[in-house]
Image 1 (spheres, rainbow, N blue to C red):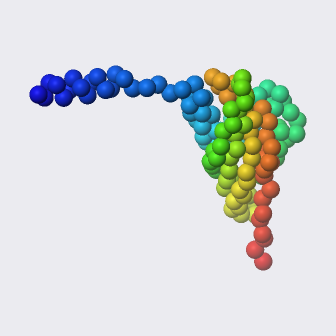
Image 2: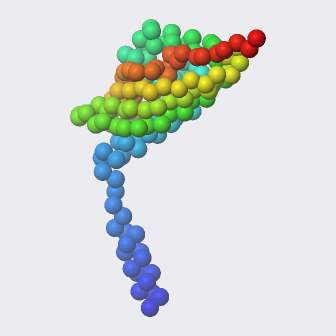
Length: 147
């Protein structure tokens, strides 16, 4: 009887379904976004640009925003929460997300939040090709000086 139970359990384990291609892509995008949040804590252009397409990584306005952010922030913690993924075949995904940046500036600690839309391309290694909405690479900090 015990042998029969083990045989049934091992048979069930072998029939594990694999993820659909869309679910695999969603998993890769989620991992990429979480890795980006971690790398932003280094606040260095070299740690952030690998997540961007070459066109965006070479865009002067984008790199200037990242460099300004990193010059102002003594410490930085980024958190991204994906709200929705929109698959736009063949290799484009629109990622709607909320973000929070906690930074230490010369004037003291500050937290800023926003919502953004990342357009990502690439199935195997998704990269950000465009950012719209509140840009986490160019946030507006509300620091109120203490009298």
